[in-house]
Image (cartoon, rainbow, N blue to C red; front, side):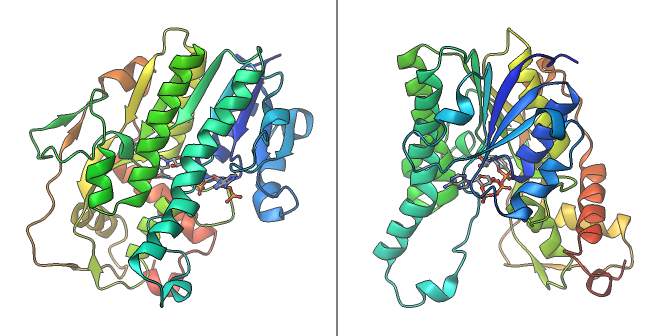
Length: 344
Ligand SMILES: NC(=O)c1ccc[n+]([C@@H]2O[C@H](COP(=O)([O-])OP(=O)(O)OC[C@H]3O[C@@H](n4cnc5c(N)ncnc54)[C@H](OP(=O)(O)O)[C@@H]3O)[C@@H](O)[C@H]2O)c1
């Protein structure tokens, strides 16, 4: 019970990664002050309240990233702050709404919906941390998005590590707005932490999969769900993949290990979507899976991500095959994929 008697804050606690983080923190005996946007929404609250230890040691706070000082109450008196809250999606959520708007309007939308909450929101949370002397360390949930996208070639021989930084101009040019949001947010956070002289560690996971605790479908688990919904094609893309339980555990280790420092990339394996489909086919031979790539171009190559630093946090990765299986079983249990579409 390494957390007994200690109080920590988790921002965006309803989310996919944060829900596992809250679960593990409660298991370790921590008292958790959890920020959620809408504490009155059962879908954002009930799965947290049901966790072991929640009755005694979980406290919900309402907080919104773009409201100044919104996180003060949740962070006040905490030894550690895990800042996970940030919007995560790649596409416009309501394409109908954008049918008639021009590129500039779309850009403004991404600025307001993705980039501002990520960057200004992170500075807002860090501002609350700076106000209270109780905070000893901040663990920021960044992303491999802030590491690997800078125009340098990524091929099977290339090893990406924590010394890589994404280039926001390159990402803007490529219209990778989520990547831009995470890159600018991490950069702003490091500048702020340096200026204020506080201890911050970042966790930089790739695509996170594995079981869902929350009742709503999150973006990264949806990537697997989409392959099982009768789609004819898979994307021509290669991503790193990592299990949500390893990601949550890494956050806690990064807080508890005094020597933890800097950034930690978390990737069990980089795989092209065609390889993910192959793993699904082996696990669920009778399921309907896409059998061709969405374009005729050569497959986007895989690359490597160094595991050295993650090892120092004690991470012994769950293999991708198990992570995919756990995702599918969870998606089935929560009815995000039906027995008829997947024929499983
Ligand atoms: N999943 C991945 O593959 C992955 C990989 C690398 C990094 N990450 C990072 O991990 C973190 C958590 O992601 P996730 O996958 O767990 O996504 P998620 O399930 O969508 O969780 C995101 C959380 O952020 C909260 N949030 C979003 N906008 C907010 C706002 N304006 N004010 C307050 N809270 C807000 C959401 O609140 P509501 O529940 O109210 O919407 C939600 O709790 C993010 O920082 C993401 O960038 C994720």
